Image 1 (spheres, helix red, strand yellow):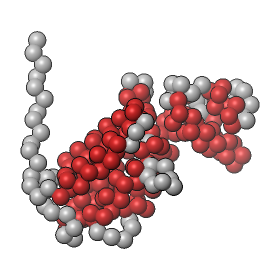
Image 2 (cartoon, one colour):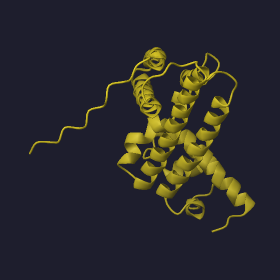
Image 3 (spheres, helix red, strand yellow):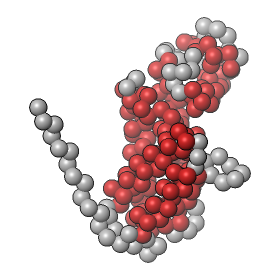
Image 4 (tube, one colour):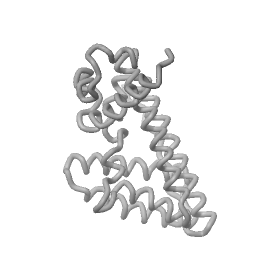
Amino acid sequence: MKLTKKAEATRQQLLDAGHALVLRKGFVGVGLQELLTDCGVPKGSFYHYFPSKEAFGCALLEQYVADYGQRLQALLAAEGSGRDRVLSYWQAWLGTPDSRGWAEDCLVVKLAAEVADLSEDMRRILDQGVAALVARIAATVRQGRADGSLPPGADAQALAQVLYQMWLGAALLTKLGRDKAPLHQALAATHHLLECNHRAPAVASPTPERT
């Protein structure tokens, strides 16, 4: 259904407000009435903008993934070596004394476990967003090796995946402990992994379950 410009603006308002609420409460924890009240939208009008709460969640995640991709592109397009640009991304997770870190506003950190069991469509959107992010990090690692700012080493795609997994875990522990020490430890480990001039050991295949 095509919406009027006013309705499109209201729909966007719901998505923006929903993002802030979901970051605080998770997806299940946000009620539709709370969302409508927060936006000053009349009761019962939610389904004029979204056919279901799941559809709202999908739209919210699609917008998040697209916005994140644009921020990442702007960050990695900056001048500097490949090494500098890779490290600038992880430094952004930490933030600065004057700005919030990307980890604090990350919906993958907040929602991955929740939506994986809740909605296949929402899970797929996040999973595809993560895959695109990891591929972009891997490409920047390759650029760093090509320009000489990073030494040869493990497969760039595998390295990017390991780095992302490490930072995701560090972000979760940071939320749990309300302490950024895990993120600082992840940054130190990232320096080490990027500068290792050797091939990483192969990842063992999962051992079949015994019956």
